[in-house]
Image 1 (tube, rainbow, N blue to C red):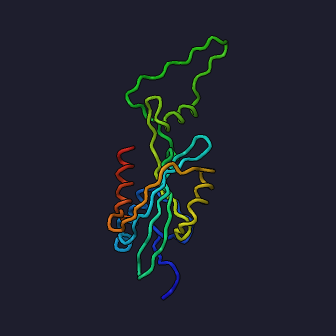
Image 2 (cartoon, rainbow, N blue to C red):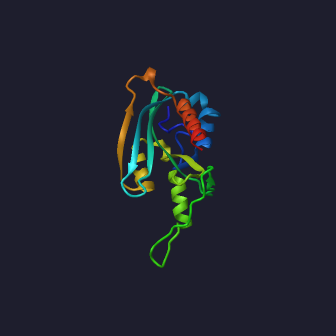
Length: 186
């Protein structure tokens, strides 16, 4: 038997992979389903960046049981404003211009409106880009470095750990959960 990891791009990519939630889920639920159903969630960490805008994300740790071997896998899941920001009004009244007692009155700039929309403030919404980031070969030790590269220093706020393999969520179940969350939140 070879010690080489199996070629399963949605779990063990040959390079660092940044995938849209739906592209990743299609691999998990589609072409690789027979293998990915053998991949079980061990723990899930809710993390938050230390510096503004204090981005929150998840680190998910799985074990793939395949050919009498166990492959330890780590991924990152995050939500961010989509590349092409499309701010839409949610039946909220238009904001009135800011009135100031000083001779110079400052109105919110487009970047402030974009930030407010991304944060869900101001009665506006923004299309989100939910993505999965997988280190090269899915190596479990690498999500910390990848998270630090993407978001800077961060802390773990909560951890959910599964101790009973029979009660653990499979990768296809996790992928479906992410799809549903994306549809509800957008």
